[in-house]
Image (cartoon, rainbow, N blue to C red):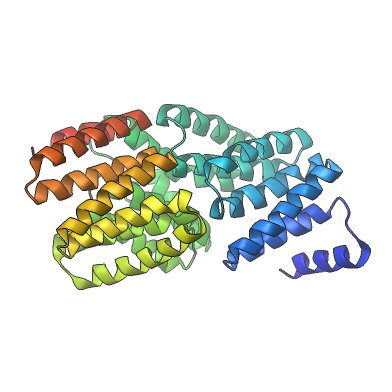
Length: 361
């Protein structure tokens, strides 16, 4: 932080130069961390303008990492950052900024997974290519960050029996996690717990999902992924509230809903459907049937409008469960069918098989 402000001081005192784009992009990332998303976006835009003005390829990878990897998704659809991050990786490799290139590659992959833009089969190929490059260039920090994504994608793609559900059943993952905890690498540990929560929730192991969510909170490191962490936390807590009736899960879910409500006001294209689905689930838990029914349909429409195919699939599955529990087998069958179609379109064959085996119709 001291370095960022010193760079800003020098820029203000002596005027802009080629390096000023790094100063401003760093400042935008700091402001984003402080949750001043509007100021962060404005400063980030200035950084991009300076980058273009000086045609500074040597700083492109760094600036793209800060602006498109850290802040842009709070003010615009995640998918709009994907191509600039890929460009940041490519230019970083060309200019020899290998570390920043690999950071862009990691953020590019995370953006693709979180937005559901790529078919999982194509996404797995990207993971393989970038992962091999990370090993080749000895960028093992980023390679370790890919492992949780690789595991989840493999378990969604292939119908090979029970999903591994990450930590505890995958020895390599467990080794990486233990080392992360030992070295106080909170970012890696938090990310592993996050992807564990995602996979566990998708496959209906809600106790495991909330266990991962709680362990991630214990790391003290926030990896919001533009609302996705709060989204899966809230879904997991509400699923446990359905199962147990314990009020503590409702209180935990309310915190997640409050966060998503804030994010949805900033960037509805990323979070409106998330908020609507969490609200639908909360209405379902509290027995407000009519309101829940309306919220489910709104969530599905909003997810489709924003092109979050995987979260549209989840919303349909949750709606199907709701309608089935409330005696409307016709609407339940419709939403189960939609969920299967959308999961298959995303490439999650294993999840489709799991649904077919578990649907109680």
